[in-house]
Image (cartoon, rainbow, N blue to C red):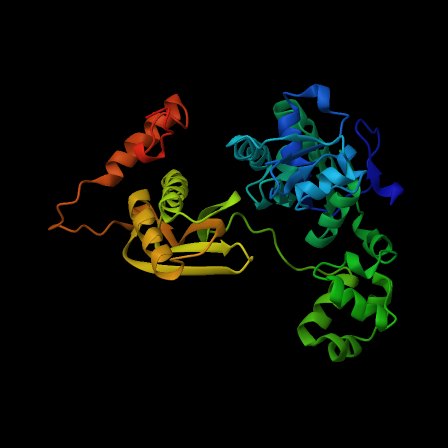
Length: 405
């Protein structure tokens, strides 16, 4: 792999002819965002986490990973692995703000940007090369430079002919590097890798392939497709054989329409009080409603997610007469669902989600006989106030702390 890797400031770049697909992945994104204002912690093991007994690690920097600390690991486990671990509380709104700035850098180069999450995306730069007077690898280097200069964090870039190989390459580039896989060397790059590197191969499939004597991607590529179909099923067998042979016909698809928007919270201590849970549902409904309005969306279905103390989890939903982006409507429906489907019992997590989304321009059903006040107007006014004076400028009175009241 060393022959493919490009370091910062490299004088020469590998042949990237025909390699129009880039995969860009931020390095330890959440932690990197926080460390911009905490440079004294850069070389220390750091995680972003709530830090409580039930918190999980949202992200770990590379010094922490050397101790075996990983994202999604319980914070208590991470602390046992690395007693000197530094925990930073997540900063509300920070990661979305940085992500939007990074995605804007991508879209300055090409409209064909397919975000996979806040911190990674595919880009198809094939149509932009002549306009920008650059090669794919040069654009990858330009992205890395701009992300550091404009946002103070680093990213890793994979450059390849197809999406799957570009994603593999960016993983091998970490941290803070770029890997270019020349189109003519795609198979030479892929074939020495273990079967676990194939996109879609989990632990069980990996074990099954190894039992069949297939240990590397080269083994899968050399296997007769009929054998893979008999062993794995037609769809999976054909999929893995195609990837192992360097084929991936999927195009980069610019942002697809969102299917749902939600928010949830895990409690440090199980909650029994339905009054307290009602307030938490209000807090979550406020977040969901504000996000819907900011994105110009409304939804017709409100759902709740409830996880009990024994980890049993339920989801329940209700479809409304008309689509909404109003927190009051979302909250009222969520409270009714909670009362109907989880009237008793200790709860460790609760969430609210709105589904069946459509653009706000699709119209709003007017109930002419309704004497209800225009709650949406009030919430839009609150959005404007919060955008000017901060997130806590306007809140429902019931969410104020006793001291604030």
